[in-house]
Image 1 (cartoon, rainbow, N blue to C red):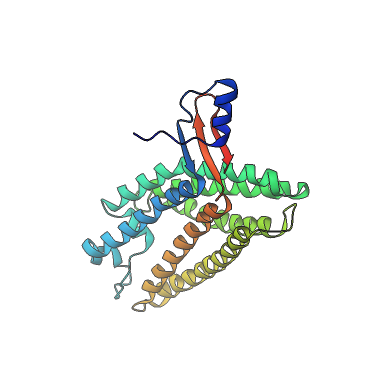
Image 2: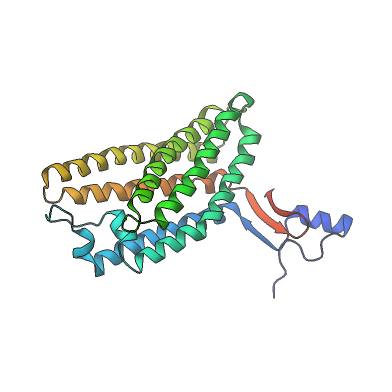
Length: 266
């Protein structure tokens, strides 16, 4: 069996003080942690849409207009049938705490790099991120079929706070740092945030347009475009949060019984 590799901080602590016998309980690079966290809803989303198309095509793509349609809406794909609803709900519940850990990481990051006169903006952005996580949990647990009012309120909250958070997060990383100089990885993350936010907000507008047009005119195929842009909204939101893998590429999450959960630089 291979011996667990310890970070330098732990090796030093062991040598000087003798406080640690076996090193940390676990160590994981934050890039891997964030990728795993976002992958849970990503793969469950792909599964739910694919399963609905394969086994519930007519039921999931039908609307009150009774016109031809090739894609299910997200609500139909993740909340109307089993096992899709169960898979989606489990993935959101499991990834809820890791998402809050990522928010905690950003708090530490903003405390360190954001200018003092922009700290209130950073705190507000972090609050929005927490609300976004709770609203996503709520709209996933309370489906449109089971409790439409709660689902609708959670969905509207999710859209508003997620868009505002993405805008503020981009602003903070682009214009509010103490040191205006950015590394290659920081510039890459900032550019990705900008591009994903633009695609996301554009897709929301287009999805709303096709949804209203479908309801007003009942044209065949229009609801398919609504569903497609809904998918893009979800995927770009996931992609935006996945930029945390770049923001914290040189950091590890470490847990040991002496200090609990900590952040360590590589």
